Image 1 (tube, rainbow, N blue to C red):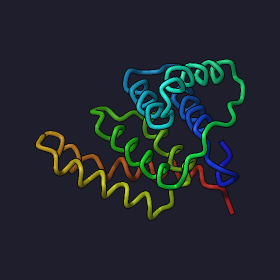
Image 2: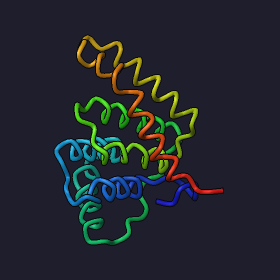
Image 3: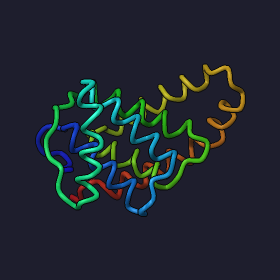
Length: 161
């Protein structure tokens, strides 16, 4: 997915995430959940949701390039990033691939540092309002480490100036 060039498109974002998830050759249940959640957020039309994720997955497996899709506006990109960050973080065992997905989404959706920090605050607030004390404890213990790891991955994706 070209970073910083042209509009951000649904098919390209989804394909990039699938490539990251498949780089180790295994698609875990948690990774499938992330891919499914992203598909729901990207492909709003019922027919697209039924057909496009499988088509894109098969194209990625075949090693072909995926282009196009609907243009994702800035507000939609921010919402997708926040929801995917929360979905990944709430997972009890955050894998390296799942963190890489968040980093690649941040890059591909063109989320700025300020927007990333705002997303983290929103996720913290949402999770702290939860009635689940176990989840709140997890937030307090793990969020800083996850933020550092994702930040480091994101930095490696930034174009060098």
